[in-house]
Image (cartoon, rainbow, N blue to C red; front, side):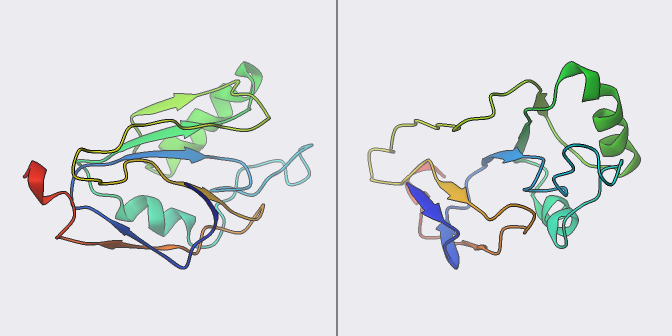
Length: 134
């Protein structure tokens, strides 16, 4: 499901995998190095801090290996938890394909945001979703 920033998204209480882009999504898109440092978009840091510890966080970025060291340092200095980070991701579309649960639980969402404005979607845990898997 691809949406341009829904106001609200109902999600199950099950553990999740968050696949998040960095530039223009979580941090200010700084190409070609106008600011010269990474800077969180308003609300992004708080969002990352709110992700439950049992959830997996994967960062995707088109940043090259040349930018790897300062990117990892920025995340470490800001105590940002993540499980994986993928550098050199293509600059084009990112396509997520996943199967639905037998009870119809949707297991993949894609939200497109405007560049340099953190996602305004409210993620609401619906305890009636995914109960088949408790």
